[in-house]
Picture 1 (tube, rainbow, N blue to C red):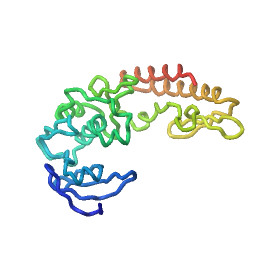
Picture 2: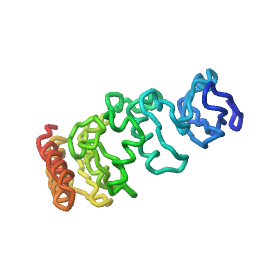
Picture 3: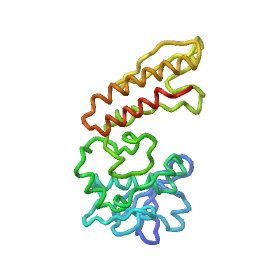
Picture 4: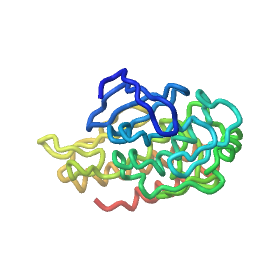
Length: 239
């Protein structure tokens, strides 16, 4: 499918192909609203792809856009549809299967419900997070979610690498196992060690201390307590 070509859909007007992505995925833009999304050639040919900026229609087979205004550039809608897509978009699950088991509460099924909550939050420049407050959580709801800075959102990336088989932060440099950790956006070396296990333990201890330090800086007691729980989990990791 060539870029710039216009295609008809069954229920969402016309769309234009704007970019070809890796793996055969295609980025399209709907003519009426400017909404962009990534889909497959088959969805374009069948006309089944939907414009989620159109009001009063199902969004990813779950959400309901009940906005009473044009939401093309609405920051509340952008966060809402991103959340709904992570939980219910089959195309996204094909690329990011870790979101397959995620769900959204009944209140946030409706855009108006999520917007009402988000308007009361300190959200500007921040990411919607579902598992800082409750480690391992996969259910989006007012009780479980909060907005956090990009730095805080990336703080808890402490899972072992599936590629090297080494703990996160550890690499084999030929002379041993070197430990590196990012602190406030800067890479810090924690030395070279004889075994991967020893290096992993060094990283684990330093990461735990750093997370606790960040926890004590939080004004939101829910985030503070959540980070303390994460620190406990890191401390108990066995490499």
